[in-house]
Each structure stands twice: as C-alpha cells, then as structure tokens.
Picture 1 (cartoon, one colour):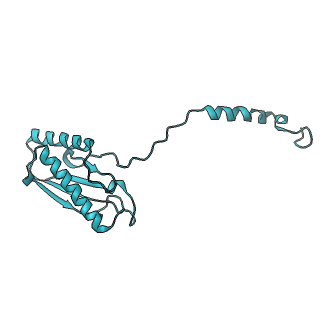
Picture 2 (tube, helix red, strand yellow):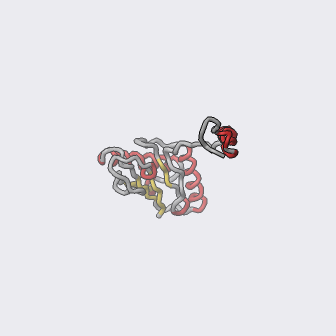
Picture 3 (cartoon, helix red, strand yellow):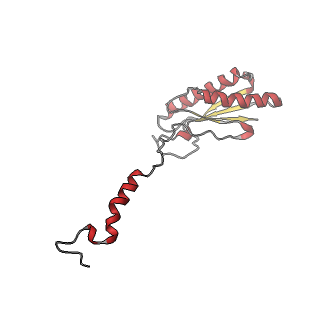
Length: 157
C-alpha cells in the first residue's frame, strides 16, 4: 500500500476511516460540569464545634448560612452550659491596604459579636480581636485575593 499519489487519501489507510466517527462520538460525550470557584470557602469546624466564618471580599456582611452555623453552636453550648469566654479573631486578605484591612477585620469581629449577642451570649463573655492582614491562614503576596484569609475564628476558652 502506498501513501502518496493521486489515489492516496484518508480512506486508503484502514484505521484512518474511523476518525470522523471518533470525532462525532467525542462531540456527543457528556462533559463534566464546570463550576465557578466559590468566593467564600466551605466552612471547616474548629475547636469545640465552633465554625470558621468566611466573608466575601471587602464585606463584613453576615450571611444566613453563617447565622445558622452560629445558632447551632450556641445552642449546643447553652445546652451543655459550657459558655465561659468566647474570643473572636478577625482577619482580612491582602487585597486592600493594611489600614483598610484592619478596619474591615474589626467590622467583621463586631458583626460576629452582635450575632452571638443576638443568639443569647452575654456581651461580657465575648472578646474581639482584629488582626487585619497580619495573620493569614494562607500565605499570599501583597494585593492578593485569598478567600480563606477573610475570616473570623471563634474560640471558646
């Protein structure tokens, strides 16, 4: 069999005649859905069942999901009569300037403290600290957007 000349073409090599069929099959194959990366990470649980609360970029808004997480944790603590002191440690990513991020993390701490009080925790049992961009969970360069660094940690002591 020769692969040159006027009679040569895709049908002159037996295996090549299946290429159009393979292309058609591949075009019909189901594709895995592509999901956009979430702007806020999933919420892992930390010490004594308290969640980490993540925030959207530049925001101190408290979501309904976060309210539910805090309500569940408060409910368990009240049932166990285990409330002593709650420390809030608020953080920001490095997407803004240091002074902006410090103020933003303070607003996040205040939002979580207000929610804890709304859920029945006495204000004198809550202490809040804001670290701005100073204590990242994930190291990042200046100006970087890192969702896991936009968080408030709730620690029971």
